[in-house]
Length: 133
Length: 111
Image (cartoon, rainbow over all chains, first blue to last red; front, side, top):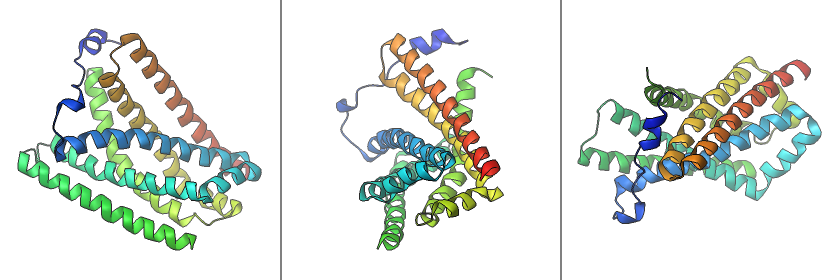
């Protein structure tokens, strides 16, 4: 590590409890929480392909898990976290180009992210439910 | 380019790649939800799907590794623990990336 000293001396994030929750701060921490949750989802997808490669018997384990109610709920949770992380991620990419950084714009884009996440999840959930029934 | 800038840029580029790949995967998972073992194998063996899933694993594990590193740097005050956690996550994500590609190749060759 070249810049060992910079990494060591970087400040820590302030504790969240100090702030009054606002849409901007809530979405910011939700981005991280959904990111950590998606890491678990990525490992689950890895197991899907890994068990598929191991053969039919191993794949049966995945099939039983993914077709169970718990599996369906996790898949839905994954899509919910994914769509939120994706829409909010697009918001972050715009910010990186200096677009929409004003307080009003970031509040509005935050509301749009919430609505888009809700719509995507509901549509995906209905299709998923249609497949199960 | 300093490693910090490289980290920042890689995080953004992998995010852009994931934007396409994750949408593709979410739709694909819906399509193969009801498929049997053989049908799923056939799905994966189609060149577009095997290339996309491999790319998905590469960019996603990269994005995950960089993202988790920032979270750990922000919330773990103990320097030693922090470094060990980052090294563990880095190694694990490389290992899983390689294993996933090997799995895809194995399916293409042996099934």
